[in-house]
Length: 127
Image 1 (cartoon, rainbow, N blue to C red):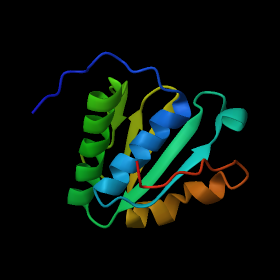
Image 2: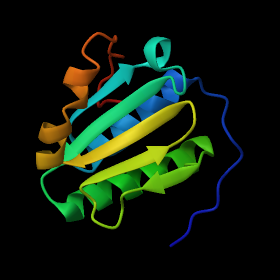
Image 3: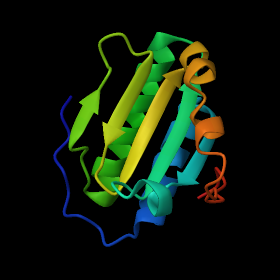
């Protein structure tokens, strides 16, 4: 089922990252965090990182994030990488990137440790 993008809503990058985090959380994404990497990385402002216990759930989280951002904000990813094996799916939205990991891959790559010096954007599952 393909969703048509609505007219983009004027939300800032933080609001869009929170929308992505909430979508991941709604589909059983685990330990979802938002890292503000813009000052150190320069090519994107934020990483949304989430994980799931199995490949089916990783795909469900990715689909929900894409669906919600399309419907609620009129945004589609510029590209999506990693859906074939769904161990680490990267959704590139330009100003923010969503990483959805299989739990073992998240532990192996440990992006939170790699980016431990950057601030986290607080968010809550409640809208």
